[in-house]
Length: 50
View (spheres, rainbow, N blue to C red):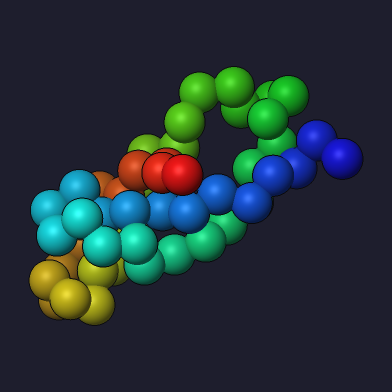
């Protein structure tokens, strides 16, 4: 039960586009991933949010 569900938020438009899981024992820091934002229509950095 170390995996938690996290929501990824676009850093430019501030919309929550993706959900994923993360192992909080192996990755203690928050995720920052470059993913495609359909609202901006380009690849932007997404960060973990509540």
